[in-house]
Amino acid sequence: MRLLVIIAALLILCVFPALAQESGGIVQVANNPTLGPILVAPNGMTLYTFNNDQPGVSNCVGQCLELWPAYTVDATASLEPAPGVPGTISVIVQADGLLHVTYDDRPLYFYSSDTAPGDVNGQGVGDVWFVVPVEVAAQPVVSEYLLDVGVHPELGSILTASNGMTLYTFANDAPSASNCVGQCVALWPPYTVDAAANMTAAPGISGTISTIIRSDGLTQTVLDGKPLYFYSGDTEPGDATGQGVGNVWFTVPLDVVRVGGTPERPLLVNADGMTLYTFANDEPNWSNCIGDCINNWPPLLASGTDAPVISSAGIEDALGSTLRADNTYQVTFNGRPLYTFVNDTAPGDTNGDGAGGVWSVVPVTPVARLGGNQTLGTFAVDTNFRTLYVFANDTEGVSNCVDACTQNWPPLTVPAGTSVVAQGYLPGTLGTIQRPDGTTQVTHDGRPLYTFANDAAPGDANGNGAGGVWSIVAFDIPFEPPATCTVTPVNNVANLRQAPTTASASPRSVNFGEVLTVDGQTLSEGFVWWRLTSGEWVRSDVVSEVTPCAGVPSIGGGTFAPAATQEAGAPPPPATTPDVVPPVATQEVIAPASTPEVGG
Image 1 (cartoon, rainbow, N blue to C red):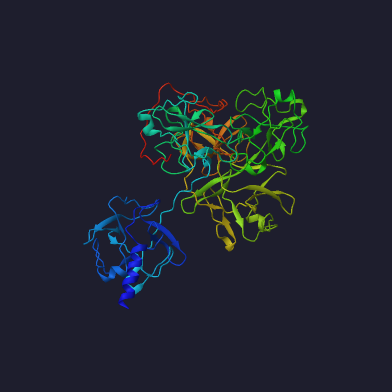
Image 2: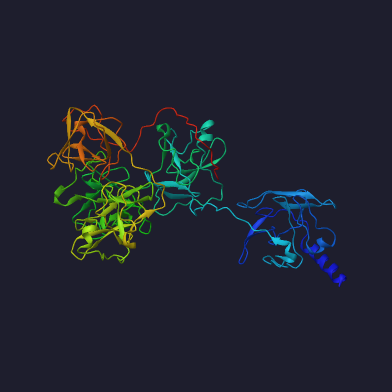
C-alpha cells in the first residue's frame, strides 16, 4: 500500500511541478457550480489551504506533501494575481529551498486526487483541507465599441470611451493635432489606443474615427479631427465634472434631436438648438422635398436606417429614419421626415413656421420629470412637481381607475394627438393611451399615470401604498432637492395669485418684509412668474430676490429668471443659453480631487 502512495506521489510531482506564471496571473478565479468562485493556479487546478498551518508557516511536511503538493514557483515568477482577485500574494521559503506561494499569508496546496481542472476532491478532507473561496470585485462593463454613448442627467447623451468614462475635447486644439501637453496631460489624459484597437463606434454615433501620433509618441483617438481626452476629476462612469472647465474643455453631445423652444411652446430642435420642421406634402416615412427644396429646407440626416437616432430622453421611441431619393437617411418623428430652415439663424428662431401653408414646427409636451423627497428618494413627478402614481389594478395600456376613482386619483391627461416627452432625464418610456371616457392619458413604460388629490405640495407622496395598490414611480437615483430661492415685495405690498397670469382670480396680499420661498418659475404673458412653495404665484417684477433665483427649476422647461435690477412693470429680457461657449486663449488649469486610472 505504501508503495502505491509513493507511486501516486511521483505522478503528482509530474502534474504539479513548480509553476511559472502563465497569462492571467499567478492565481486566478474559477467558478465552481457548487462552491462558487474559488482560487485556482494558472493551469486551472484547484488550490487548497490547511487549517493546521500558521500565518506564513506551512505545517504540511514529509508524507503530507505527497498527498498535498505545495504550490511552488521559481524565483522569476511574477506574484501578480489575475485582475479583480482580492488578497495579497507572497511566498515563503520551504526547508528544501523551494518558494511556496501564499494567499493572505496562508500557504497554498494542490490535492493529489484532483486530476483535471475543476476537480475539488480535496474539499473538507479531514475537516482541515478547504478550497479558497473568493469574493471577486465587480468589474466595469467594457463596451465592444471604442466610442460609446453615455447618458448624463443634465447634459443628455454624451460620448464615452469603451470603459464608460466621459470623453472631452479641447477648444485650443488644432484639427487632428493635440495642444494639451506637459502638465495639461496630467489633468486631461489623452484617450490612447494600441494598434489592435477596434476602431468602431456604437450605433447612432456619426463621424469619422481616426488616430494621431502625439508629440509624446502615444496614439490618441480622434473623432472628426478632434482629439479626445478623459478628465482626471472624473472618478466613475457617468461623471462629467470636466464640462466647461476653463471655457475650453467640453463633453461631446450626441443628441441628434432635443426638446427646445420655450416653456409655453416646447418644440423639437436639432443638436445645435435649431428648430425642426415637417412638410405637409411628405408621405409617411418618405420625403417629397428634393432638388432645390433642400436648399431652403435641409433634411436632418441620420447615420443609417438600422442605427438608433440618439435623442433627449423621452422622445427616442418616436424617432426613426427613412431612405431618401438621394440614398441618404433622414430622421423622422412619428414617421414624419424632419428638416431645418435656412432662414433660421439662431436657436429659437421659428421663421419657417407656416411657410407656404405646408411647413410646421413640431410641438411636443413635457409631462413628467424627476422629483422626490428625503424619505422616499427620487420618483416621477409632473411638470408642476405633483407626484405621479401607478395603479396595481391597471393592466398594461389600460386604465381601470374610472368614475369615482378619478376624483381621488386624477389621471395625467393631455390633448389628443400630443407627443409627450420628459422634461430633462427620466428613465423609461413615456406614451399615451385612450381612456374609456375618450381622454388621452400619459403612461410610463405602458402603465397609466395619476396624481393624488391629497398631495398639496411638491414632494408630497401621501398616496404611496394606499390600499396596497397605489405606488409612486421610484428610481434608483440619488435624490437632490430642487433649487429654491427667497423673495420679498419690492414696494409695500405684492399680490399672490392662484395661477401665473395677470388676471388670475383670488389674489392674496403680502406686505413688505415678508420672505417668500420660490420653488419654480414660468413665462406667461411676457412676464416671469415665480411659484411659491405654498402653490401660489407672484410676478417677478413686484418682488426682489433675497437669495438668488437663477437656478430655480422652470415649469415646462428653460430658465427665465430676470436680473434683480429689472425695472418694475417691464417685461423681462429673454434669457438665452448659448450652445457654444467661445474658447479663451490660454487653458485654465483646475486641479481635480483625484486621478482615475486611464486605460489605453
